[in-house]
Amino acid sequence: MWRRLWAICRKEWIQIRRDPRTLAVIWLLPITQLLLFSYGMDFDLKRVHVAVADYDRSQASRALVAAFDRSEHFEVIPAAGRAAEVERMVVDARARLGVVIPAGFERALRLGQPAPVQVLLDGADPTTGGTALGYTRGLIESFSREWLREHPIRAVAPAESGSDQAVFVSSRQPAALDVRARVLYNPELRSANFLVPGLMAVILTMIAALLTSNAMAREKERGTFEALIATPVKPLELMVGKLLPYVLLSAGNVLLVMLAGWLFFGVWPRGDVWLLAGLSLIFLLAALGTGLLVSTVAPTQQIALMAAIMVTVVPSMLLSGFAFPLRNMPPALRTLSNLFPATHYLVIVRGIYLKAVGWDVLWRPALILAGFATFFLLACARRFRKQL
Image 1 (tube, rainbow, N blue to C red):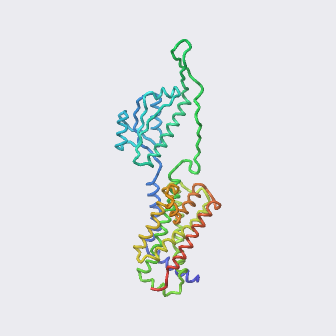
Image 2: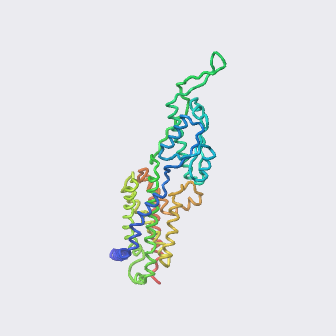
Image 3: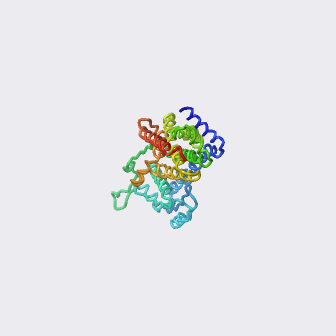
């Protein structure tokens, strides 16, 4: 048995080594995809153009505009200074955000009264718009707290000698909720910390399935399928023998993607690296088994490649929880998402990368992946018939 298994592994390894396109897919595609996706899908907003209409023209309003300009998220651009012009700049996409400071802004602040600020937002892109609005609210709230600390409130009270009002300085600040938020697991709220582990699951799913999707279809097109039938190799031995070389190559891809994430984005697992390696190996067996099953069904390499893309790329991007939260999906799609290995591996890789969780938390998705790997391997063996 072991001699037959070794012979199949050696044959597959020689075929891989003689195919430069396969080697290019194995080593270049993961790094290219990681860089393109990570840089192209950066959710962090930087230097958002802000158009400001300042009707108050006071010390407080100028300080608020300066706070926007100092922030790494915003960049104040010249505007005509009127609300209509600000709105026109947002509509024309010259500014992503518009801020209108009404007259009496500083006076309201000094008297401890509400000082409204109008924010005009481009809602054509809800994700970006929502993020920009969150940054804006945070900046304005921070500015308000700083202003109250540095400038005592001037309260107004009736004068004793007549109907005129007297102004005095109050040392007591108005009561307010003291909200102190603490962000767990990703305190900097960096997109890279969230994207790199997710891309690791997506990229490995695609690469693994693409590698094995041609394993059997190639034998049929090259005319070597008959030779395999004539050998004493059993179906399960053949599938395991074809799978093992790709497992070793894909394991190298895991290390390659991890190192690229660390070198280019400074993202490294916070949890046990060895646990991640072991669970990644189980996931690779499932992902490679998916491509191998496609290969046993498809009559040609072209059809096998297209089928592998359909069953891995689209689900891993849209239905795994990588880009869209699963809890926001309809129940039918949430159920469907559980049928893809990438969904469960994403829980593992993000758990180890961001939360440093261990086996006590990850045993369930690990067992599910092991079940997928076993099912795909047995299904491939069953699909293979030693007859033309």
